[in-house]
Image (cartoon, rainbow, N blue to C red; front, side, top):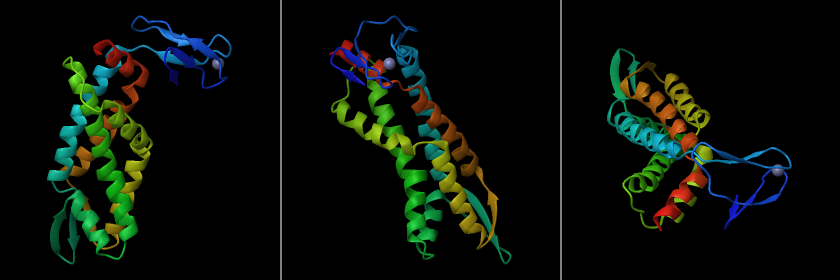
Length: 202
Ligand SMILES: [Zn+2]
């Protein structure tokens, strides 16, 4: 947590005056030893690379069938949004909304916000309303976790499995890679380093 040039230790509430840091160095609370901030400019670059990778995987995950279905000799396949649609019309609107939010909306929000904040920064300028976008990403970040995606996906496949035999298709593998790319993108994004870089541009 940062107030102007003061740092607050989240563990023991000690107030520290902030000093400029060299890359790779970190601030440790002198009272309780908690790591307050690690300055890693290359972390933002890693975050951007993982975000761009996640964006490509997101497109693949939605453009191709996620599962093939075999029911009574009939074969068909469905996309991620197709699964949401069939859940919705199968009298499971709440499950459909949960799956839509965890596998489509939240990943889209986090990928979009990270690229919006990091790509212009990498190119040497600031995107407008970066603080508002940062807040949106901060709110949706707890949802952008492997566990949540997995839950959404497992619920969908188990619901579909009750109706037909489910065979994995290309978008499912792409979606699994997407989960890892997005988690890595979020983990490498250090807000303090981000704002340090923003301040340098202002
Ligand atoms: Zn402390």
